[in-house]
Image (spheres, rainbow, N blue to C red):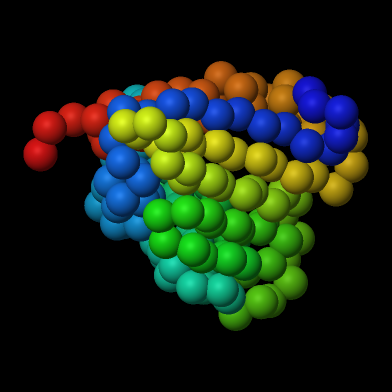
Length: 156
């Protein structure tokens, strides 16, 4: 964990320009292909990319019913540059009581011939960050970023 013990971070270089990585994030059918570690399936319910817009995904394993995954509110949307969402609010700035309160700051920074994709995840306190880390933050978010890279780097 970084010096701020309530924060978790992860980043990866993706061999695709920020516009292509952004498109993979901002298009619901694209997001559904990489947002959750395979073989778990993702269904994008809401992806309203504007401050106050809703972000909701569901997941399912083995063909069972879809279960809640993320319900959040976008705080900042800067196309091809930065995306910030929080689970402590839902669409329209409505307060929420999530099972894990977090704010995610996603960066799409141009670097050479690609993108430095970074996630900085803020938690209420060190205990929540440790809980998220123990749940497999680095493996889970790392897997999804690898899936994003494979999707964004693919021809076409």
